[in-house]
Image 1 (cartoon, rainbow, N blue to C red):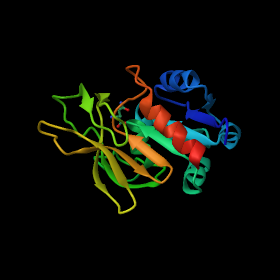
Image 2: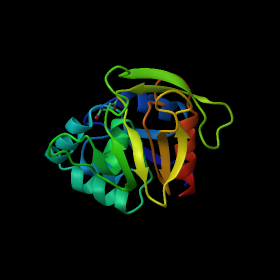
Image 3: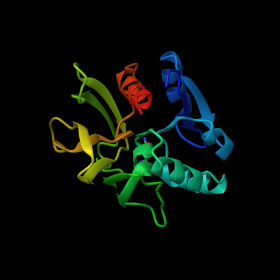
Image 4: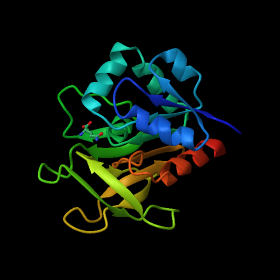
Amino acid sequence: MPSPSIGVFALQGDVREHLRVLNDLGVDAVRVRRPEELARCDALVLPGGESTTMYKLARTFELFEPLVDRIRSGMPTFGTCAGMIMMADRLEDAAEGQETLGGLDITVRRNAFGRQVDSFEGELDFDGLGDPVHAVFIRAPWVEDLGEGVEPLATIPAGEAAGRIVAVRQGSLMATSFHPEVGGDDRIHRYFVDLVKQS
Ligand code: GLN
């Protein structure tokens, strides 16, 4: 696939930041608000934002089922923060009635780092990348548990949350607890674009 079209779920969240990074990488990146727009994409990014709002809007705009179908049928998908929550098969600390699209065989804990450390930044080793990435966490989830087919890509290196998994990959699905779309480091998006090109 020489030039894939990558959609960014655009009903809620930090859509512009993802579009900018993808465009700077020379990718044809487009907003996805309707099923017809999703149908034209080879791959998808689910941005950070608020997962409880995202699933409701996806239902309202009749994107929920098409998203579930595409993810199940192997469309490469990359979720960041709330996007990770949307891709999880199982949630801890979900809001009442909260639904996810699923696809990733993981249990994700929402707002896992607690109130005192709502937002923080730090350097993380990321599988396959030489130098550490600068990771920005905003009311972030972590991966509480993962299935056999899921590979951890990054963990918290030190402190109270040391060892917690904050990035995973399962085939052509990947997700990070943090926000690689902010901070000017495009290597994780590159990682996803490579994955899209290979699939
Ligand atoms: N805490 C948010 C949620 O539950 C996620 C925060 C984020 O995406 N930065 O959806």
